[in-house]
Amino acid sequence: MQSKPFPTHTSTLVIGGGPAGIVSLKYVQEYGRKFGLQGDGDGEDSVLVEMEAEIGGTFKYRAYQNAELVSSKQLTCFSDFRYPLDAPDHPSLPNFVQHLNDYATHFSLWPNIHCRTKVVHLDRIGAKENSGGYLHRATLRRVDGEGKETGESFTIIARRVVITTGLHVEPNIPLIPGLNSEPTPNSPEWIHSSSYKSHDQLRGKEVLVLGAGETGMDVAYESVISPAKKVSMGVRGGFLSFPKVLNNFRVLGSTFDGNLPIDGLITNLFETAYVHPWVAASHLRWFVSDFVIRRVLWVLTGTQAGCNQWAGELPPERQGRAYVFLNKSAKAMQFINRPYRKMSRLHQLLAHYIDPPVPEGVTDPTIHMVPFPSKFDSEGRAVFPRPPKHREKETGWKEECKPDLVVLCTGYKQDFKWLGEGYPSGPESVDVRGVCSSKDTSVGFIGFLRPGVGAIPPMAEMQIQLFLALTANRVPIPSSPETYHLLHASTGRIQYGVDYSTYQAQLARDIGSAPTLRELWREHGWFVVFIYCFGAAFPTFYRLTGPYRSASAPKIVRTELWDTIKRRGVIGNIFMGVIPMAFYALVNLTAYLLEMVWILAAPLFGYR
Image (cartoon, rainbow, N blue to C red; front, side):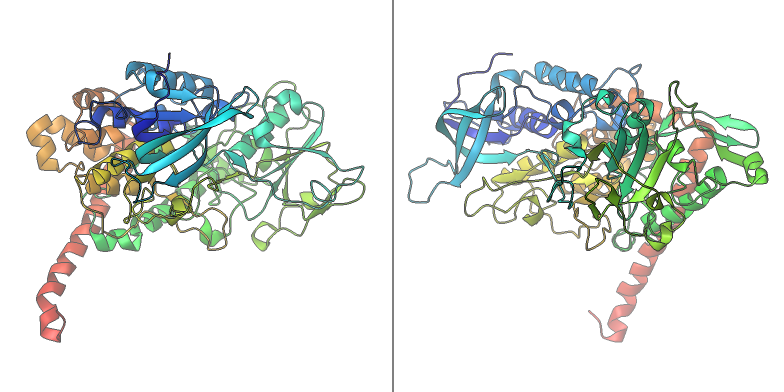
């Protein structure tokens, strides 16, 4: 894993060594010369810099005990380097980091990777300088084992820059009076979740977890089983819980234990492929699926707020994947539900959700749901506002909460102050699919959108494909509407959520790799057509045809991706495949017919 000597020039500089950076480097290496982006002389080889000692990004450096992927291996893996079929659906984070290292080895990326190297500034090279086509100058520093910059700065110039520094690097730490703002001698200890590593930090303490994302749910669960003395969870508006696998439902005396990853259940045909623009713009698919899913959840679990979710819910009008990220870390829900779960005996006889057994050694199997505290008093007690109306049944805020430890699971923010004048201020300010600016396709932002249900690594793979095609002038700047953004509240801190399958399919169309059914049938046969129709938006589907066609894609489709369909069973494929397909086929056909009528009738009414 020896790196080449650090060059002074590069065709492409990749900044960041997480999954997005690794897959970006791989595509630059594989397609740079094919696309005319990289020559054979000095200063042409691509370079990746990573400020940490090893690659892996968040999966390596923000990992903690018992953490595992909440997206499935089938969806999270890159298109042409897969986990074995017998590997767990949701690998541990150390296992996934090893998978990334194996990926770098398999594609011979190590010579181009330089760790403990940090970009401290990025400048544009002026037009007056005779740069030979190099547009960007990066100033770098070496970083020691403690993350401190060392030695003299040095520079590298590049024709293009791919920024993959990630969403989860700099902790977002809200200031809370009496805790980390104007603390008192009795203020409790606090840490950000980025500093949490094992439940030894929680054992025997009264713990208050602030934030109900997937990390917050993990930390709350680990607090219970550590065991902590008492566990509370502070939540602002609410969250939407849905386990990462469909499992543990009992219906009419029969138990469903299929262990199906939920991110592989949305089908392609008429949901991402052959969708009329009017249907896409209306988000009808999101609203219909949310409407149906909520009512199915009520039948199966007794509540519409989430899957087996009886507390901490969102307002009713925002309970759906059209609006928020699904929280797929659901192990803590049985402890959150404990004071609130109420089902009639008749309903339980018909259907209910089966909680796993309480782990041995747990002294208090309850997580007390409370609002986000407004402050801590002089004695170190949390002061809570009243919960919002839709959560008024929650009573934990009335009890004394004097934690020994507060864990801020409040997410991360991004810092782009190192970008010089003339660059976008960040990925939120670029106008081409969250990837680059239409005014400058020499700078790409990869891995800065987050799916409501799905995974960032395969999205990053599609993003680097689009970026390289754009920067090589192989495809035009996309002009079709962006119908993939989640409907976030305007006041929300996070605005970068997208619907995974809608986004992936849109990028595939932009690139020219979204297959038609006729194309698939002609080149790969009816079996691949069937798998594509019933499968989810796996990136391998978009390498069956188009500019990034892969020789390994057909075999992966016929084996691993077929397995995701086969595991659903006949009944599962009827309810999760045939019925939605038939419904959305009718919806899209109706839209196409209405469009034809409008085209024919519009001139009669003076419209052109």
